[in-house]
Length: 66
Image (cartoon, rainbow, N blue to C red):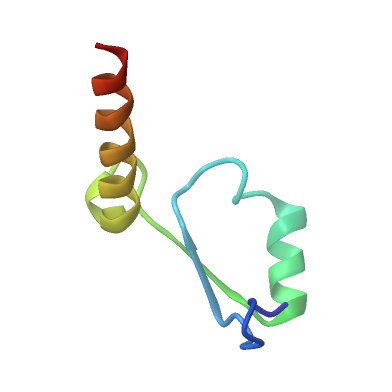
């Protein structure tokens, strides 16, 4: 697995969401040599960039609804 510029992915970091934590996906990552890191459940502080982006999008959506 490679990203758009051709570098191999070494680590996949995600929350403990069901879309990323299941046996088949874990097996696939292992076969590709990709390490999976998950954050602790119910701790948005560990997902700083994603949480800030989500908050910004939600604030924009709320402002447009006014």
